[in-house]
Length: 387
Picture 1: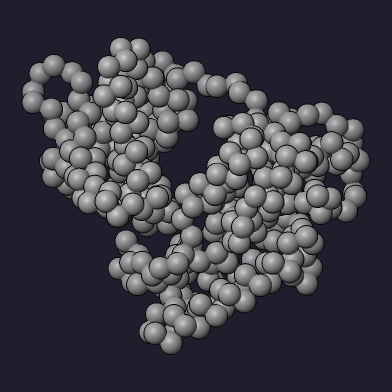
Picture 2 (picture 1 turned 90 degrees about the vertical axis):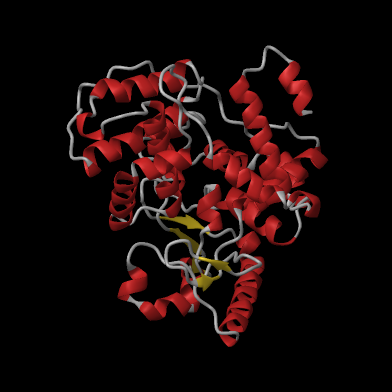
């Protein structure tokens, strides 16, 4: 497959590399084939040696080498990120983009950093690497963090660069009968998670990161914590999934008790809660509703605990179910969120209500689904309960 892709001159080198990286992740992290597990070390080593310096001149360096050259800056940035309680994913993404930026301009005197160097890198991503607008914005956010928060420089109003074209694609939305068919082709925990995603409009990671304390089965509500933009919101708990969710909570409690008996039972806590409330690490309320099947080591605290289930497992289950149903290949977990919003609007709920349920900051984002008449003040009924 790799040979066929590389022989196609219409496919750019970076796209070939993306395909190879995707296969590495598929076989080693998702499917976990025993014959492919040996690729883990090779893959990690290969990524650490990524070269991001396309300019002629001094010998290019990889990400590992640049980490040693700019060790003080990297560590200082890491400390600032952790002081500000950013997530481990944000920390990794920011540091990776900063390293790529330093590789691109190697050798670079960080004390003489200027706006043009930042603009050149961002323009390279858009023009040469042909990245999406979201990828370019992610790089911009990481470098801006380093410039303004770590180095205390002010480049405001001085950045002029070519922006990646923003896609104007409409979301994929399923009919109610298609949603029903999709959910019926899912089993166990994945059926529950996908059902809740459709029934509440939660994002993938919002569902994955639910804690026991966020579920209120008495009032039939779910509190979504730290959603996009670090906002909390409340969504309806579909009556259709109330019984299954209670059973899942019981399974989570049973698993947690076994962990405690074995000397474990800790989970990851946001911000500085682990220091403020050490006992909360082992409290049932803070455990993830959908826990991982194995214990893991927290990369920051080095504590052994139980994290949530990996998002790839739900994504793969939904993709497989969609294929069985003959649904478009574009169907994903996020499609269920799009369908939730559209079906609410079709049922006559006003746009502001749907905006609040989705956690959108701007109503214009919600308007992509449709325009509806204004009917405020009505009780929310999840579309999942009409299946």
